[in-house]
Length: 303
Image (tube, rainbow, N blue to C red):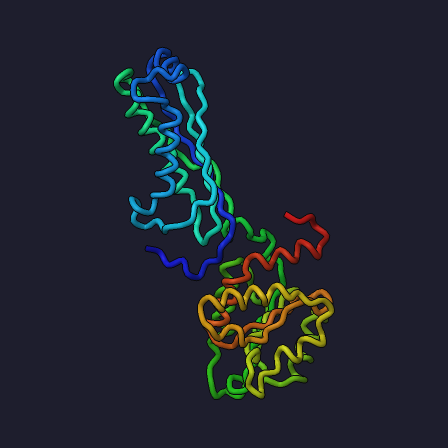
């Protein structure tokens, strides 16, 4: 199965449909009048479809088990066609489009099984996904490529040349996946005054997004949050709350991070852990969702 442990829970929705076509009006009449010998075709097939939705991961190997929090199956008669429409919701890490299509398929097959004694010319066609919502693709900022970004590594040892930077480069690669390019990448020491000076200069230079990595822990030289906090003109606590909550599900030490986030004038500043894994998980936790802030500050309406 595909690894989805890096993903975050969000509301996922999918609508799928299938078409069952009978060969004569008498079949439609029998369905409407509930005179089909095997029973009420719509109700029996709806029950089968609901079971199929919930059992999708049992029969399709790469589908993850997930909580189905809403499912609806509707039938619509259009001439000799019966249109089956299936709607499924979940709050989980992966989508429900396969569940919706599986439900549509089994609903149609159940109808076929119930109707075949009356009609030998039944066909099932056009099982398809009509729409889906949720997940990171639904929250991408189409103008992300226009955001001026900087990645600043705070590390005494890397700044002194004793170690090579891996975390800053990992962050840059993560940003590329969200269509964000890094206009400035720089390494500075864990120094209160240097961090403050760099923050002020980046804000003055018109950078819209600045990611600091390193110095968010509890060692004596970890000064990044202490240097950034007095400069924040508007804090956004929820950003780092989300990072720590996400991280805590993966390591019990995430609660020890002191990272902060908010605006320094018009510049969004986010402080990330110095470890590669910690920084990457932080990006996974808040991107691309955090980019919505640029729509809000521009005066755009909320989605």
